Amino acid sequence: MTGPELKTALPGPRARAIIERDAKVVSTSYTRDYPFVMARGEGAYVEDVDGNVFLDCTAGIAVAATGHSHPDVVRAIVEQAGRFLHMSGTDFYYEPQVQLGEELSAIAPMPGPHRSFFGNSGTEANEAALKLAKYYTKRHSIIAFFGAFHGRTMGSLSMTASKPAQRRGFAPFVPGVYHAPFANCYRCPVSATPETCAAECLRFIEEQLFVHVVPPEEVAAIMVEPIQGEGGYIVPPDVFHQRLREIASRYGMLLIVDEVQSGMGRTGKMFAIEHTGVHPDIVTAAKGIASGLPLGVATARSEVISWPPGTHASTFGGNPVACAASLATIKLLRDGLMKNAEVVGAHMLAGARALMARHPIIGDVRGRGLMIGVELVRDRKTKERATAERDRVVRECFTRGLLVLGAGQNAIRLSPPLVLTKDQADTALTLLDQALRVAGHVQ
Ligand SMILES: Cc1ncc(COP(=O)(O)O)c(C=O)c1O
Image 1 (cartoon, protein in one colour):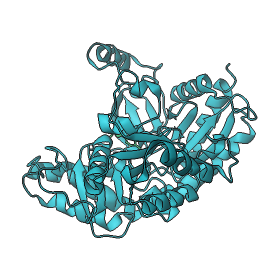
Image 2: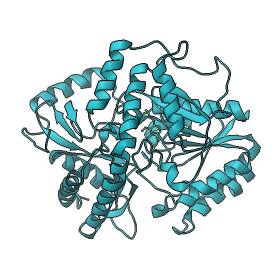
Image 3: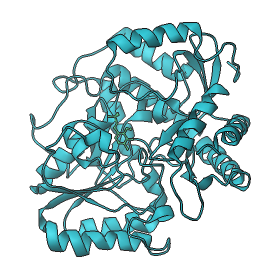
Image 4: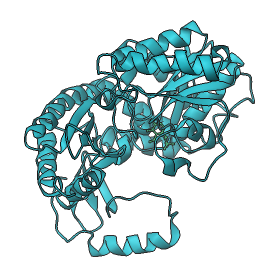
Protein backbone atom coordinates (compact mmCIF):
# COMPACT_ATOMS: atom_id res chain seq x y z
CA MET A 1 0.00 0.00 0.00
CA THR A 2 1.27 3.50 -0.81
CA GLY A 3 -0.16 6.90 -0.13
CA PRO A 4 -1.56 9.09 1.10
CA GLU A 5 -4.17 9.09 -1.64
CA LEU A 6 -7.65 10.55 -1.28
CA LYS A 7 -10.28 9.51 -3.79
CA THR A 8 -13.52 10.81 -2.28
CA ALA A 9 -14.69 13.71 -0.22
CA LEU A 10 -14.33 12.88 3.47
CA PRO A 11 -16.11 11.04 4.84
CA GLY A 12 -16.92 9.05 1.71
CA PRO A 13 -20.35 7.47 1.19
CA ARG A 14 -19.49 4.09 2.75
CA ALA A 15 -17.86 5.73 5.76
CA ARG A 16 -20.85 8.02 6.21
CA ALA A 17 -23.27 5.08 6.20
CA ILE A 18 -21.24 3.16 8.82
CA ILE A 19 -20.93 6.22 11.03
CA GLU A 20 -24.73 6.64 10.92
CA ARG A 21 -25.19 3.02 12.03
CA ASP A 22 -22.52 3.43 14.71
CA ALA A 23 -24.39 6.40 16.20
CA LYS A 24 -27.37 4.14 16.89
CA VAL A 25 -25.65 1.20 18.56
CA VAL A 26 -22.22 2.14 19.89
CA SER A 27 -21.57 3.78 23.26
CA THR A 28 -21.65 7.56 23.07
CA SER A 29 -18.64 7.76 25.40
CA TYR A 30 -16.08 7.32 22.64
CA THR A 31 -14.20 10.36 21.35
CA ARG A 32 -13.90 10.41 17.59
CA ASP A 33 -12.12 13.53 16.37
CA TYR A 34 -12.72 12.86 12.68
CA PRO A 35 -14.62 10.30 10.58
CA PHE A 36 -12.01 7.68 9.70
CA VAL A 37 -13.58 4.26 9.06
CA MET A 38 -10.92 1.59 8.61
CA ALA A 39 -11.08 -1.13 5.98
CA ARG A 40 -7.51 -2.45 6.01
CA GLY A 41 -3.97 -1.51 6.88
CA GLU A 42 -0.42 -2.30 5.84
CA GLY A 43 2.70 -0.97 7.53
CA ALA A 44 2.21 2.71 8.25
CA TYR A 45 -0.73 3.07 5.85
CA VAL A 46 -4.42 2.58 6.46
CA GLU A 47 -7.22 2.48 3.92
CA ASP A 48 -10.76 3.54 4.67
CA VAL A 49 -13.92 1.86 3.41
CA ASP A 50 -14.07 4.23 0.43
CA GLY A 51 -10.57 3.41 -0.79
CA ASN A 52 -8.86 6.51 0.63
CA VAL A 53 -5.34 5.82 1.89
CA PHE A 54 -3.92 7.67 4.90
CA LEU A 55 -0.50 7.80 6.52
CA ASP A 56 -1.09 6.69 10.09
CA CYS A 57 0.72 8.63 12.78
CA THR A 58 -1.55 7.26 15.51
CA ALA A 59 -0.92 3.49 15.26
CA GLY A 60 -4.40 3.18 16.80
CA ILE A 61 -3.20 4.99 19.96
CA ALA A 62 0.35 3.63 19.89
CA VAL A 63 -0.76 0.02 19.48
CA ALA A 64 0.21 -1.11 15.96
CA ALA A 65 3.90 -1.06 16.92
CA THR A 66 5.05 -3.37 14.13
CA GLY A 67 2.83 -1.66 11.56
CA HIS A 68 -0.61 -2.75 10.48
CA SER A 69 -0.89 -6.49 9.91
CA HIS A 70 2.82 -7.26 9.88
CA PRO A 71 3.13 -10.62 8.07
CA ASP A 72 5.21 -12.18 10.88
CA VAL A 73 2.61 -11.21 13.48
CA VAL A 74 -0.29 -12.36 11.31
CA ARG A 75 1.48 -15.70 10.70
CA ALA A 76 2.05 -16.21 14.42
CA ILE A 77 -1.61 -15.43 15.11
CA VAL A 78 -2.90 -17.78 12.41
CA GLU A 79 -0.62 -20.63 13.48
CA GLN A 80 -1.65 -20.32 17.12
CA ALA A 81 -5.33 -19.89 16.23
CA GLY A 82 -5.15 -23.15 14.28
CA ARG A 83 -3.83 -24.96 17.35
CA PHE A 84 -6.16 -23.56 20.03
CA LEU A 85 -7.76 -20.22 20.84
CA HIS A 86 -8.21 -20.41 24.56
CA MET A 87 -7.66 -22.56 27.61
CA SER A 88 -7.41 -19.95 30.40
CA GLY A 89 -3.85 -19.61 31.63
CA THR A 90 -5.19 -19.04 35.13
CA ASP A 91 -6.41 -22.64 35.49
CA PHE A 92 -4.27 -24.53 32.99
CA TYR A 93 -0.84 -24.32 31.40
CA TYR A 94 0.22 -23.56 27.83
CA GLU A 95 3.64 -22.80 26.45
CA PRO A 96 3.02 -19.44 24.70
CA GLN A 97 2.26 -17.81 28.07
CA VAL A 98 5.39 -19.32 29.63
CA GLN A 99 7.49 -18.25 26.64
CA LEU A 100 6.14 -14.73 26.91
CA GLY A 101 6.91 -14.68 30.64
CA GLU A 102 10.49 -15.65 29.77
CA GLU A 103 10.68 -12.97 27.08
CA LEU A 104 9.28 -10.31 29.42
CA SER A 105 11.84 -11.29 32.00
CA ALA A 106 14.59 -10.91 29.38
CA ILE A 107 13.47 -7.38 28.45
CA ALA A 108 12.29 -6.12 31.87
CA PRO A 109 13.95 -2.82 32.83
CA MET A 110 15.19 -4.09 36.20
CA PRO A 111 17.29 -7.01 37.40
CA GLY A 112 15.48 -10.33 37.77
CA PRO A 113 14.31 -12.88 38.40
CA HIS A 114 10.82 -11.71 37.40
CA ARG A 115 7.30 -13.01 37.04
CA SER A 116 4.46 -11.55 34.99
CA PHE A 117 0.72 -11.25 35.47
CA PHE A 118 -1.31 -11.36 32.25
CA GLY A 119 -4.47 -9.33 31.57
CA ASN A 120 -6.13 -7.93 28.47
CA SER A 121 -5.58 -4.18 28.59
CA GLY A 122 -3.56 -1.35 30.04
CA THR A 123 -6.03 -0.65 32.76
CA GLU A 124 -6.01 -4.29 33.88
CA ALA A 125 -2.24 -4.28 33.98
CA ASN A 126 -2.36 -1.24 36.26
CA GLU A 127 -5.11 -2.72 38.43
CA ALA A 128 -2.87 -5.75 38.90
CA ALA A 129 0.10 -3.55 39.81
CA LEU A 130 -2.03 -1.57 42.28
CA LYS A 131 -3.36 -4.68 43.98
CA LEU A 132 0.05 -6.33 44.00
CA ALA A 133 1.68 -3.29 45.61
CA LYS A 134 -0.97 -3.20 48.33
CA TYR A 135 -0.74 -6.91 48.92
CA TYR A 136 3.04 -7.03 49.03
CA THR A 137 3.64 -3.97 51.20
CA LYS A 138 0.53 -4.41 53.38
CA ARG A 139 0.03 -0.66 52.95
CA HIS A 140 -2.96 1.03 51.37
CA SER A 141 -2.03 4.43 49.93
CA ILE A 142 -0.72 5.31 46.49
CA ILE A 143 0.97 8.38 45.09
CA ALA A 144 0.18 9.22 41.47
CA PHE A 145 0.57 12.40 39.42
CA PHE A 146 -1.51 15.22 38.03
CA GLY A 147 -1.88 14.73 34.31
CA ALA A 148 -1.51 10.96 34.61
CA PHE A 149 -3.61 8.50 32.65
CA HIS A 150 -3.62 4.94 33.94
CA GLY A 151 -6.95 3.64 32.63
CA ARG A 152 -10.65 3.72 33.27
CA THR A 153 -11.56 0.86 35.59
CA MET A 154 -12.10 2.08 39.15
CA GLY A 155 -8.62 1.42 40.55
CA SER A 156 -6.78 2.82 37.54
CA LEU A 157 -9.29 5.66 37.23
CA SER A 158 -8.58 6.63 40.82
CA MET A 159 -4.94 7.11 39.87
CA THR A 160 -5.83 8.87 36.60
CA ALA A 161 -5.88 12.66 36.81
CA SER A 162 -5.88 13.70 33.19
CA LYS A 163 -9.23 15.21 32.19
CA PRO A 164 -12.31 15.94 34.33
CA ALA A 165 -14.55 14.20 31.74
CA GLN A 166 -12.84 10.92 32.63
CA ARG A 167 -13.73 11.27 36.34
CA ARG A 168 -16.91 13.38 36.32
CA GLY A 169 -19.87 11.42 37.67
CA PHE A 170 -17.83 8.43 38.83
CA ALA A 171 -16.89 9.35 42.41
CA PRO A 172 -16.22 8.04 44.97
CA PHE A 173 -12.87 6.68 43.87
CA VAL A 174 -10.63 4.12 45.51
CA PRO A 175 -9.50 5.80 48.71
CA GLY A 176 -5.89 6.52 49.55
CA VAL A 177 -4.70 7.88 46.19
CA TYR A 178 -2.81 11.20 46.42
CA HIS A 179 -1.69 13.19 43.42
CA ALA A 180 1.52 15.17 43.13
CA PRO A 181 2.80 17.56 40.45
CA PHE A 182 4.49 15.97 37.42
CA ALA A 183 7.66 17.67 36.18
CA ASN A 184 6.37 19.35 33.05
CA CYS A 185 9.21 21.79 32.55
CA TYR A 186 7.53 23.64 29.68
CA ARG A 187 4.77 24.77 32.04
CA CYS A 188 6.02 23.90 35.50
CA PRO A 189 3.05 23.16 37.79
CA VAL A 190 4.86 24.70 40.76
CA SER A 191 6.17 27.69 38.77
CA ALA A 192 9.82 26.66 39.01
CA THR A 193 12.43 27.09 36.28
CA PRO A 194 13.22 24.15 33.95
CA GLU A 195 16.40 23.58 35.95
CA THR A 196 14.60 23.27 39.28
CA CYS A 197 11.19 21.97 38.13
CA ALA A 198 11.83 18.29 38.95
CA ALA A 199 13.19 18.97 42.43
CA GLU A 200 10.42 21.43 43.26
CA CYS A 201 7.69 19.03 42.11
CA LEU A 202 9.13 16.29 44.29
CA ARG A 203 9.48 18.65 47.22
CA PHE A 204 5.65 18.65 47.23
CA ILE A 205 5.65 14.94 48.01
CA GLU A 206 8.08 15.10 50.90
CA GLU A 207 7.24 18.52 52.33
CA GLN A 208 3.49 18.64 51.74
CA LEU A 209 1.99 15.17 51.24
CA PHE A 210 4.15 13.36 53.79
CA VAL A 211 3.97 16.20 56.30
CA HIS A 212 0.29 17.08 56.08
CA VAL A 213 -1.69 14.33 54.36
CA VAL A 214 -0.32 10.80 54.31
CA PRO A 215 2.35 9.17 56.47
CA PRO A 216 4.99 7.71 54.14
CA GLU A 217 4.92 4.37 55.94
CA GLU A 218 1.32 3.94 54.73
CA VAL A 219 2.21 4.45 51.06
CA ALA A 220 2.40 1.19 49.12
CA ALA A 221 3.65 2.58 45.83
CA ILE A 222 4.42 5.50 43.60
CA MET A 223 2.76 5.02 40.21
CA VAL A 224 4.23 7.03 37.34
CA GLU A 225 4.36 7.19 33.56
CA PRO A 226 7.98 7.63 32.37
CA ILE A 227 6.56 9.97 29.71
CA GLN A 228 3.02 11.20 30.25
CA GLY A 229 0.94 10.02 27.29
CA GLU A 230 -2.67 11.23 27.35
CA GLY A 231 -1.39 14.10 29.48
CA GLY A 232 0.36 15.60 26.46
CA TYR A 233 3.47 13.56 25.64
CA ILE A 234 5.42 15.21 28.43
CA VAL A 235 9.01 14.12 28.99
CA PRO A 236 10.22 14.97 32.50
CA PRO A 237 13.95 15.35 33.20
CA ASP A 238 15.64 12.02 34.03
CA VAL A 239 16.40 13.29 37.50
CA PHE A 240 12.66 13.35 38.24
CA HIS A 241 12.47 9.56 37.97
CA GLN A 242 15.83 9.10 39.68
CA ARG A 243 14.63 11.10 42.69
CA LEU A 244 11.32 9.23 42.71
CA ARG A 245 13.26 5.99 42.92
CA GLU A 246 15.18 7.37 45.89
CA ILE A 247 11.99 8.46 47.65
CA ALA A 248 10.34 5.08 47.08
CA SER A 249 13.38 3.19 48.37
CA ARG A 250 13.84 5.49 51.35
CA TYR A 251 10.32 4.80 52.63
CA GLY A 252 9.94 1.17 51.55
CA MET A 253 7.44 1.93 48.79
CA LEU A 254 7.35 0.21 45.41
CA LEU A 255 7.99 2.17 42.23
CA ILE A 256 5.52 1.21 39.52
CA VAL A 257 6.18 2.50 36.02
CA ASP A 258 3.26 2.55 33.62
CA GLU A 259 4.79 1.85 30.21
CA VAL A 260 1.45 1.14 28.57
CA GLN A 261 1.98 3.94 26.06
CA SER A 262 5.73 4.62 26.29
CA GLY A 263 6.89 1.01 26.26
CA MET A 264 7.55 -1.66 23.67
CA GLY A 265 10.32 0.03 21.72
CA ARG A 266 8.46 3.26 20.97
CA THR A 267 11.09 5.57 22.47
CA GLY A 268 14.05 3.70 20.95
CA LYS A 269 14.50 1.56 24.03
CA MET A 270 12.22 -1.31 25.00
CA PHE A 271 10.95 0.72 27.97
CA ALA A 272 11.17 4.50 28.28
CA ILE A 273 12.35 4.27 31.90
CA GLU A 274 15.61 2.76 30.57
CA HIS A 275 16.60 6.24 29.34
CA THR A 276 16.82 7.30 32.99
CA GLY A 277 18.77 4.36 34.44
CA VAL A 278 16.02 3.81 37.02
CA HIS A 279 15.00 0.28 38.03
CA PRO A 280 11.30 0.06 38.91
CA ASP A 281 9.80 -2.68 41.08
CA ILE A 282 6.85 -3.25 38.78
CA VAL A 283 6.46 -2.35 35.11
CA THR A 284 3.15 -2.45 33.27
CA ALA A 285 2.76 -2.71 29.50
CA ALA A 286 -0.06 -3.15 26.99
CA LYS A 287 -0.91 -1.28 23.73
CA GLY A 288 2.07 -2.07 21.46
CA ILE A 289 2.93 -5.31 23.23
CA ALA A 290 1.01 -7.55 20.83
CA SER A 291 0.68 -5.27 17.78
CA GLY A 292 -3.09 -4.96 18.22
CA LEU A 293 -4.24 -8.08 20.00
CA PRO A 294 -5.52 -7.37 23.51
CA LEU A 295 -2.85 -8.01 26.11
CA GLY A 296 -1.71 -6.21 29.24
CA VAL A 297 1.04 -7.33 31.58
CA ALA A 298 2.43 -6.40 34.96
CA THR A 299 5.99 -7.65 35.39
CA ALA A 300 7.63 -7.50 38.80
CA ARG A 301 10.60 -8.82 40.66
CA SER A 302 9.74 -12.41 41.62
CA GLU A 303 10.08 -11.60 45.28
CA VAL A 304 7.31 -8.97 44.91
CA ILE A 305 4.97 -11.05 42.75
CA SER A 306 4.64 -14.08 44.98
CA TRP A 307 0.99 -13.73 45.96
CA PRO A 308 -0.82 -17.02 46.65
CA PRO A 309 -3.22 -18.80 44.24
CA GLY A 310 -6.61 -17.11 44.02
CA THR A 311 -5.45 -13.60 44.87
CA HIS A 312 -5.65 -12.30 41.29
CA ALA A 313 -6.47 -13.77 37.88
CA SER A 314 -8.28 -13.19 34.59
CA THR A 315 -10.14 -15.68 32.38
CA PHE A 316 -8.89 -14.23 29.11
CA GLY A 317 -5.62 -12.69 30.33
CA GLY A 318 -2.59 -14.07 28.52
CA ASN A 319 -4.75 -15.49 25.75
CA PRO A 320 -2.54 -17.83 23.68
CA VAL A 321 -3.19 -15.99 20.40
CA ALA A 322 -2.29 -12.67 22.01
CA CYS A 323 0.84 -14.27 23.51
CA ALA A 324 1.87 -15.55 20.07
CA ALA A 325 1.34 -12.08 18.59
CA SER A 326 3.38 -10.60 21.41
CA LEU A 327 6.29 -13.01 20.95
CA ALA A 328 6.41 -12.14 17.23
CA THR A 329 6.15 -8.44 18.10
CA ILE A 330 9.01 -8.49 20.60
CA LYS A 331 11.22 -10.33 18.09
CA LEU A 332 10.53 -7.66 15.46
CA LEU A 333 11.22 -4.88 17.94
CA ARG A 334 14.54 -6.42 18.91
CA ASP A 335 15.49 -7.25 15.32
CA GLY A 336 15.31 -3.65 14.12
CA LEU A 337 12.11 -1.75 14.85
CA MET A 338 13.31 -0.38 18.18
CA LYS A 339 16.41 0.96 16.42
CA ASN A 340 14.20 2.36 13.67
CA ALA A 341 12.11 4.16 16.29
CA GLU A 342 15.30 5.76 17.62
CA VAL A 343 16.66 6.81 14.21
CA VAL A 344 13.45 7.87 12.47
CA GLY A 345 12.20 9.35 15.74
CA ALA A 346 15.27 11.62 16.01
CA HIS A 347 14.75 12.64 12.37
CA MET A 348 11.07 13.37 12.94
CA LEU A 349 11.69 15.26 16.18
CA ALA A 350 14.24 17.49 14.41
CA GLY A 351 11.78 18.02 11.54
CA ALA A 352 8.97 18.92 13.93
CA ARG A 353 11.27 21.35 15.76
CA ALA A 354 12.18 22.95 12.42
CA LEU A 355 8.48 23.71 11.90
CA MET A 356 8.66 26.03 14.90
CA ALA A 357 10.52 28.61 12.79
CA ARG A 358 7.53 28.90 10.43
CA HIS A 359 4.72 28.43 12.94
CA PRO A 360 4.68 30.65 16.01
CA ILE A 361 1.69 28.64 17.18
CA ILE A 362 4.05 25.78 18.06
CA GLY A 363 5.13 26.43 21.62
CA ASP A 364 7.04 23.24 22.32
CA VAL A 365 8.16 20.07 20.56
CA ARG A 366 9.33 17.19 22.73
CA GLY A 367 9.63 13.46 22.72
CA ARG A 368 11.77 10.40 22.56
CA GLY A 369 11.94 8.08 19.58
CA LEU A 370 8.58 7.91 17.84
CA MET A 371 6.69 9.36 20.81
CA ILE A 372 6.57 13.03 19.85
CA GLY A 373 4.38 15.82 21.18
CA VAL A 374 3.79 19.16 19.45
CA GLU A 375 2.19 21.67 21.80
CA LEU A 376 0.22 24.56 20.31
CA VAL A 377 -0.08 27.93 22.04
CA ARG A 378 -1.71 31.23 21.08
CA ASP A 379 1.28 33.17 22.33
CA ARG A 380 4.75 31.80 23.00
CA LYS A 381 5.24 34.18 25.92
CA THR A 382 1.96 33.64 27.77
CA LYS A 383 1.71 29.99 26.58
CA GLU A 384 -2.06 30.37 26.34
CA ARG A 385 -3.30 26.97 25.24
CA ALA A 386 -4.44 26.79 21.60
CA THR A 387 -7.00 24.04 22.13
CA ALA A 388 -9.46 24.97 19.35
CA GLU A 389 -6.57 25.46 16.96
CA ARG A 390 -5.11 22.08 17.91
CA ASP A 391 -8.45 20.39 17.24
CA ARG A 392 -8.64 22.10 13.87
CA VAL A 393 -5.08 21.09 12.94
CA VAL A 394 -5.92 17.46 13.76
CA ARG A 395 -8.94 17.63 11.43
CA GLU A 396 -6.99 19.45 8.71
CA CYS A 397 -4.36 16.69 8.82
CA PHE A 398 -7.13 14.16 8.24
CA THR A 399 -8.43 16.00 5.18
CA ARG A 400 -4.89 15.86 3.76
CA GLY A 401 -4.44 12.13 4.32
CA LEU A 402 -2.60 12.14 7.65
CA LEU A 403 -3.96 10.59 10.84
CA VAL A 404 -2.85 12.21 14.11
CA LEU A 405 -4.45 12.46 17.53
CA GLY A 406 -4.48 15.13 20.18
CA ALA A 407 -2.91 14.64 23.61
CA GLY A 408 -3.56 16.73 26.68
CA GLN A 409 -5.40 20.00 26.27
CA ASN A 410 -3.48 21.42 23.33
CA ALA A 411 -0.81 19.05 22.01
CA ILE A 412 -0.69 16.89 18.90
CA ARG A 413 0.79 13.46 19.37
CA LEU A 414 2.83 11.72 16.72
CA SER A 415 2.88 8.02 17.58
CA PRO A 416 3.24 6.20 14.26
CA PRO A 417 3.91 2.51 13.80
CA LEU A 418 7.60 1.84 14.43
CA VAL A 419 8.08 0.76 10.80
CA LEU A 420 7.82 4.40 9.70
CA THR A 421 10.54 5.39 7.22
CA LYS A 422 12.32 8.75 7.07
CA ASP A 423 10.47 9.51 3.82
CA GLN A 424 7.15 8.78 5.47
CA ALA A 425 8.15 10.96 8.43
CA ASP A 426 8.92 13.79 5.99
CA THR A 427 5.55 13.31 4.29
CA ALA A 428 3.82 13.46 7.67
CA LEU A 429 5.64 16.68 8.55
CA THR A 430 4.80 18.26 5.17
CA LEU A 431 1.12 17.52 5.73
CA LEU A 432 1.32 18.79 9.31
CA ASP A 433 2.99 21.95 8.01
CA GLN A 434 0.10 22.49 5.55
CA ALA A 435 -2.49 21.84 8.24
CA LEU A 436 -0.78 24.30 10.57
CA ARG A 437 -0.75 26.92 7.83
CA VAL A 438 -4.52 26.60 7.41
CA ALA A 439 -5.57 26.05 10.98
CA GLY A 440 -2.84 27.65 13.02
CA HIS A 441 -4.30 31.12 13.01
CA VAL A 442 -7.95 30.55 13.93
CA GLN A 443 -8.97 32.24 17.13
C1 LIG B 1 -0.11 5.27 30.11
C2 LIG B 1 -1.41 4.52 29.96
N1 LIG B 1 -1.80 3.68 30.92
C3 LIG B 1 -2.95 2.98 30.82
C4 LIG B 1 -3.78 3.13 29.73
C5 LIG B 1 -5.06 2.34 29.66
O1 LIG B 1 -4.94 1.35 28.70
P1 LIG B 1 -6.25 0.61 28.16
O2 LIG B 1 -7.03 1.61 27.37
O3 LIG B 1 -5.71 -0.52 27.33
O4 LIG B 1 -7.00 0.12 29.35
C6 LIG B 1 -3.42 4.01 28.70
C7 LIG B 1 -4.31 4.20 27.55
O5 LIG B 1 -4.24 5.15 26.82
C8 LIG B 1 -2.21 4.73 28.82
O6 LIG B 1 -1.81 5.58 27.88
